[in-house]
Image 1 (cartoon, rainbow, N blue to C red):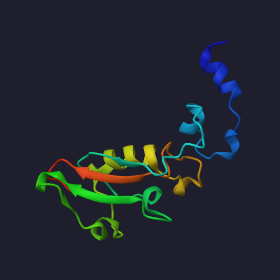
Image 2: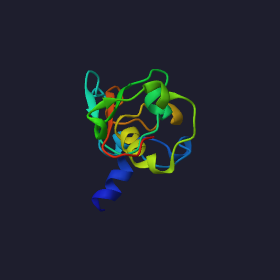
Image 3: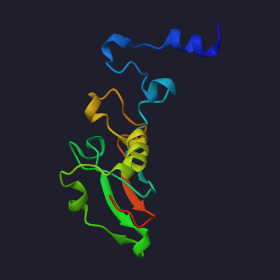
Image 4: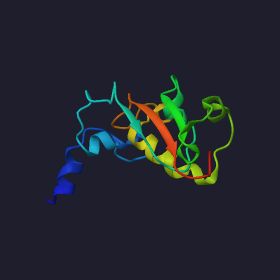
Length: 130
């Protein structure tokens, strides 16, 4: 039996209960659930971010949006948090920040990031802004 086959035999959740049928990151990595990133602030540098519900609900954990193309100007958080459609080029920054630090809000807690309780700073190093 290969290592991957052995790992799949040992995981302790039922795929029928998980509509996405994908093993959550914390399970795949055998992460210590006591370590949530609480008290840690993480900076994600990308040209596009969208205020995803896994980062902003029920409590907004995005500490700042910073435009480093404008000498580190902190951007208006209310602009980013306003209900609007995400820009097509904002997917990468959104994806990486949610995978790392999302709280699983939209998946009923199934897909939480390893640092789900951390705060985020989102500096954008290009002229595009989401």
